[in-house]
Length: 221
Ligand SMILES: [Zn+2]
Image (cartoon, rainbow, N blue to C red):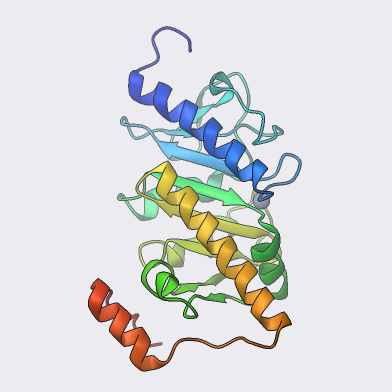
C-alpha cells in the first residue's frame, strides 16, 4: 500500500478486495458484475472500480467518492452503480458498508418479481424475515437509488427487480454475510419448491422465536 494511506483506509481497501474474492468464488458475481463500498472515517466512500472482476481486485484500484458522487481520488473510475450505495449511506448514518451482487437464485427471484420470505427457519426469522423487492430501475440512473431508499432503515437488504440484490450493514463483513444469507434463503426456497415442501413456521413458533431473541414483530401493512 502506498505511503500516506491511513491505517483504517488501508484495512478497508484490503477487506473490500477480500469480500470481492468471496463474492466471486461463491458465484455471486459474473464477469465484472457487482460492487462493494465502505464508508471512510471522514465521511467519504471507498468503492470498487468499474470494469474489474471482483475476484481480481487489488487495494490500490479502489477509488474514493464523496456522498454526492464526486470522484475524489483513484486511478480508475468508480462503478456506475455506486449511486445506489451513496443513497444508502445518505438514508441511514448507521450504515458503514454496502454490497451489490447478482447471486444466481436471488436474481432468479428478482427477475420473477417475487420478494423473499425468510420464515421457514428460525435463523431467518431472527436475521432476515423478509427481503423486499425494489421496483425495476435502469442501472446507473437516479431511478435505482430512489427504488432502494424506502427499504433502508427498516431492512438490511433488498432484491433489485430484473437485476440482482443489495445488502448493507454497519461494516463490510456484516453486509457481505447478509448477502450470503439472502442467497441461501433464495436457494432454499427454490429447492423446497422443487420437492413440493414449501412451508413457513407456524405463527406461534415465529412469535416464540421473536420473543426469545428479542426481535420486534414487523409492522403490519
Ligand atoms: Zn448490478
